[in-house]
Amino acid sequence: MKIFAMLALFAMSAFGADIKGTISDAKCGKAHADASEKSMKCVNACIKNGSAPVLVTEDGNILKIADAAKVSDHLGHKVVVTGEVEGDTVTVASVKMQ
Image (cartoon, rainbow, N blue to C red; front, side):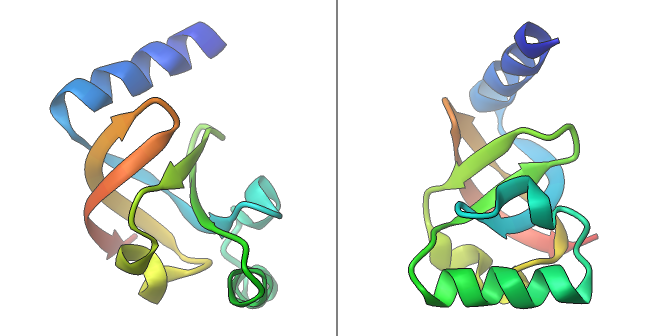
């Protein structure tokens, strides 16, 4: 299963893609993928205290975000990120709420 996920990420990196997931923080990661009000508060606090934002994909992968400013209005929210994946990092072209 991990091999399939890595191949899918590689395929997205070559062509760009729409990736569904939740904007969380590097400290808590998947713990806040539910986008609840409690999770949103924690994500915002962790980011304020220096943790980097990450994208937790619907299939549970965690991607670093190349330009954190592009997701700053969506901390803790479920989103669709359009961008390119290279390795474990997504370069965000746009973000919209799910």
